[in-house]
Every structure is written in C-alpha cells, then in structure tokens.
Amino acid sequence: MGQILSTALLAIGAAFSLIAAIGVARFPDLFLRMHCSTKSATLGVSFIMLGAALHFGDLVSFTKVLAAILFILVTAPVAAHVLGRAAYLAGVPLWKGTLSDEMRAQNNQAIRNPEQPDLPHDEIQ
Image 1 (tube, rainbow, N blue to C red):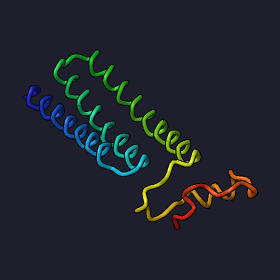
Image 2: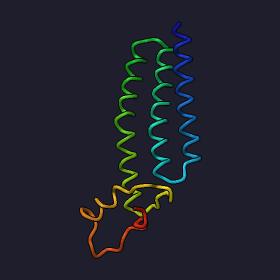
Image 3: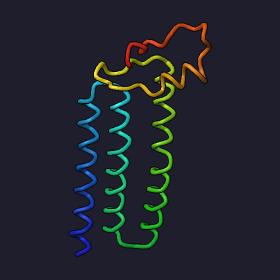
Image 4: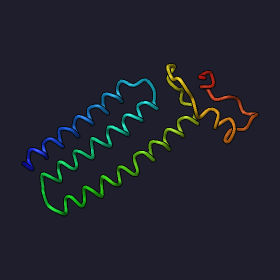
C-alpha cells in the first residue's frame, strides 16, 4: 500500500513539474512565467519529496522532507515577488494582452518622482 501511495505522489509531483515546464516555455511574458514556475514547481517538488519520504519510510526522512517543504513554501513565493517587482520597476514589458496594471498607480504615487518619464508600459490601462 505504501509503495502505491509513494508512486502516486511521485507521479503527481512529476505532473506538476511538467505543467510548470510547459508554462515556462509557452507563456508570453516574464510575469506569467514566474507565476507558473513558482506555483506548479513548488507543488511538484513537494509531492516528489513526500513520495520519496514515504518510499524510505523512516522518521528521519519525513522530518527532513517536511522541513524542506516548509522552506520551499516560505521562500519561493517571496523570491518570486521580489524578482517580479524588480523586473517591473526595471521596465520589463508586460504582455500586450494584459488587462490591468495595478502597480502603475501605486508606482506613480509612492515610488516614482513626478519629473521622471513614465514607465515603458504606461499604455496599458
């Protein structure tokens, strides 16, 4: 029973990792790519690690895996947010199909100097 559950967790993790890889290859801009790689890859790695811990079946493996999963769940979203914000402020262009730019108003009020020229994606409404 444990081997079947371990195999299922490994397969689910591999599927999430595949979805992340396809999203990184197919999505049109940096921000969408970062979103899919952070969400899907985090789930993929978590399921794979749980499957491996279940395969080995000892308390030490479970403890290490739970600590690693907790670390990934805490650091991956924060890192993606910091990188995305830095890319946005550096002027990385948004996809032309983007419907809203909620950071533009915030940047115009709090961060940017009114004498500076507008960001390259000011044409997005």
